[in-house]
Length: 471
Ligand code: ARG
Image (cartoon, rainbow, N blue to C red; front, top):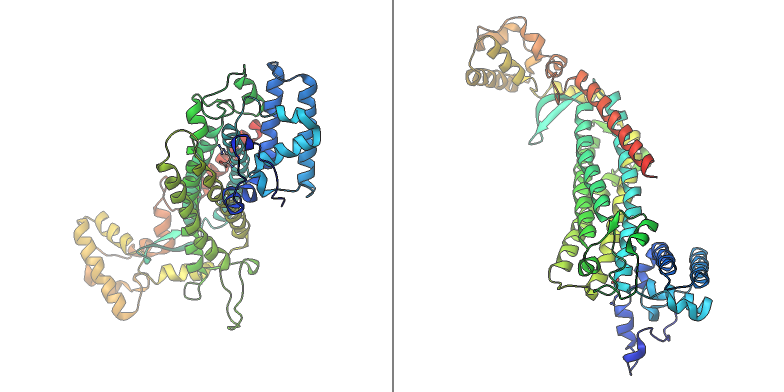
């Protein structure tokens, strides 16, 4: 990087920037990732300036050609980024002037880096949000496919991580689908709210040139313009909102990961994770470690941290732009990278799960998971629920003592607990009877799982249509 460059703002300065201060204040090492959005914003700005007569068409075309050539240079890896030129904006502008001469100096008319960077980040995040939502729906689709295949598979459902009642594996998987559906709503909501153009706010007060902000907004695909120039340059709500949505989504992925880790353990052995998503141990030859879900669980922490960082970054800032805002980028970029990668690997990992159906059923069978069904059975025979609860508790105590599940007890063993118990009790003590009985919207019955999968497919289809319409 070249460190001996004249500053575009050098006019009022008589001493050069301290070398360490130069590096300390520069952001180009990380904000260069905004280059494509910066160039798109500049092209729109130059086009608008020509439309309102501030630039000639010849000047506009020279600027646009120059910017496109610079984009090609960057993408070919031939662009020399300079710390002395501070950030992505001044690197590109300085290079433009090198390439096309004095006309390049006209690009920054009626604009400031303050509205420029605010525009760049919105454009960047808008693109990333589209890619993230795409990965999210890929994961949701994988979940529905697995849930459909496992609509009849019985596993223990848990509260307090203790066996509670039998549920179907498909039903359990669709709980994750519901969470991701809410995440989907939050992210698309965030994308809609951020789609307003800050450009035109200039440094903070607007500009005296006869700009046409609506025109620039249209060129860049924004739905409208930010309505107050001070707010336009200082607002980073969209970044905080995105990172908050990401933190929530990561929390969901983390909980899901935790379940995968538990289920893949030798003690549970409910699922086998695909070999390509696990690693071995360098010392213990038998190990197959669930690294991918563990890492996702771990990465959730850094996204939470980024949310706190951004909230704290903004909380003390007076209007309008302050250099503090430069610190918005690394947390935002890392959140985007982390979330995208986690969603991608999760979507790939789900189809590589092999359910161990026999083990799940066995675990549900041996955990007194139909105790509530026995109580409900007694209630149907006229026993008040609290008394029924007491009766079944005693039966379970016997089962614990004799190491025998309720479903495996004989009528002779059960009848001493209540003379309401008859041979029809075995209909409700079976796992299949138990799950099939919960046959209402939101219940775990296989029929309900299939209906929920159909609704989920319909929802995915509608979202796909929406995305196609937008493009
Ligand atoms: N690199 C700066 C940032 O990311 C660009 C805006 C600089 N504006 C200024 N007035 N120094 O925030």
